[in-house]
Structures are given as C-alpha cells and as structure tokens.
Image (cartoon, rainbow, N blue to C red; front, side, top):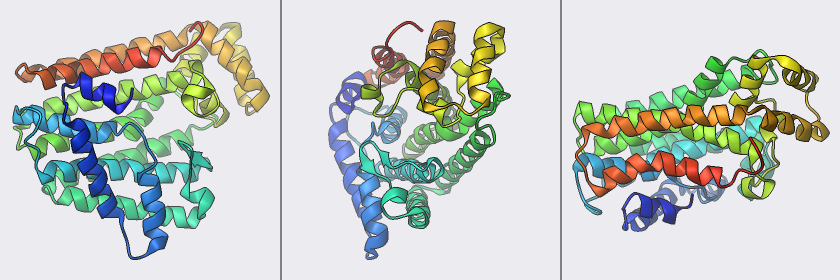
Length: 338
C-alpha cells in the first residue's frame, strides 16, 4: 500500500503536503557538522518505506482535534518526525544484528561504513528522536522512551528464540508487540497528545495502534512465506533462513503429524538455502498461514472497535478502514494456496 492509497483511504488530501514537511524536518534534524554521522543518517532516513508511523501520528492528531484536513501545528510534525527517527534507528540496529547488506535497495550503514559506525549512527538517530518528542511534552517523551524499551525487549526475545523449535506462540506475540506494535501504538498516542486529547481519547488511539501493530506484523510475516521475491524485495522464506520462526511455523509445529516432524528435521539442523523452498511449501499446504491471517483479522477488529469513542467524520472512518484495507492489499500480493 503506497502513500497515495493511504492518503485516499484516510480522506487526507493534504497528507502529502504534511509528509513533505516531515521529510524536511527529518533532513534538518539529522544534519550534522560531523559528516560521518550526518551523511549515513540522511541516507537511511531517506531510504524509503511507507511512513506508516508518521501518517498515524498525523491522522491521530486530526481525529483528536476533530479537525479537517489542515490545522496541523509544528508539534505534530515534531511528533511524526520523532517516531520515524526512532523506527529508523531501530532498523539500523536490526541491520547490524542481521548482518544485512541492503535495506530497500540502499546500502546499510554496517555494510558501507562498518558495524562500529552503524552502532553510533543508530544511537545518534535515537537521541535526535528523543529531542523531537521532548518538544511536545514530558508525557510524549516518556511514551517514546517506553516504546524503545519495549522494542529492545522484543528484539531480545527474538534473538533468544532464534532457531528454536521450542518457541511458543506467546513468546512470538510478545516479540511482535515489542518490535512493531509498541512504536505504532506510541505513534498514535503522540499524535493524540499533540492535540491535547483527553485520557480516554489517548487510550482509544493506543488501543487502535497496539492492535493494528500486531496485525501489521502478522501480515508482514505471512507475506514472507506466501508472496514473491519481487514483491518482497528479498528471498521468500527469509525469516526461516535467519532462524526467526513466525506464527505459521509455530502453529504447524503445534499441530504435530508428519508435516510437523519434517519441519522439525529441517529447522533443527539449521535450514539450508536449498531447503527453504521445501519448508515454505510444507507451511503453505498446512493452512497455518490462513490461521495466522484469521488472528490478524481479530486484531484488526479490535483496532476498529477502539475508535468507537470518536464521533463520525471522514478521517475517523478512514482510520477504521485502514486495518482491513491493509490486509486486503497484502493478500493481493500472496500467491498460491495457503
């Protein structure tokens, strides 16, 4: 789902203008007299992506303000920049852990400048993120800091469970909450705080962000198994190869039987690239991708229901539709039976 599609769905014709303001803010924030920090930081910040987190910050602020398509102040732009900088910083650190050479076709800092350099760039971006959040108020800064802590928790859980066929569904969901949902939740909350929302309104948008964030990650994990290399920009089954066993794999292992036994054989010995296709085929035939998507639909319903406290307007209705539309967009990129 590209930015134009999200713009139309959320009934925010001025969203592209707002995002341009955020892009300018990101550029200004990461600039540094030290080009060894500034240049790689700018490269990764401009590396693309859906900008879903700042979009949710903007939409949440407008919902809380009960405003139309304008009326965004500098604090909302700062909040949107804060969450995107935090997200980018965490990606820089993820690339170090994964020893990734590229992200979205752009060289990673660890591959171009080196691991030590990448650690410092990630830290620099986190610090700049905190500065932006602090411009709003202490609550926003605390909320962002808590999301970063939760991201560290989620990443740690994923590392501990790497290559483990004993990984549980509960542990997987906790990791997904930390790595993805926590920052999406914070993105919505920070937008609400920029609009002086009530506590009930902040809680409602937090509930939306948390549930949609979990569904978002479940869908992303499913795409890794049932999409194409062209759509993903990376090999199908990349999570399997890296030892990250997601919900479709865990559901299959829970079910037992010959398919689960064969999957255990493949995974326990450290799956080889030539065996990934067999493992993916087993998962597709098991139906556990569909089971995972059903769970995502449940989270999407919770996300939509969380917004019931707000009155009806085009932005609220667009926000309510976003989770299901994102799932529809993703399933159109899934191939074969699953």
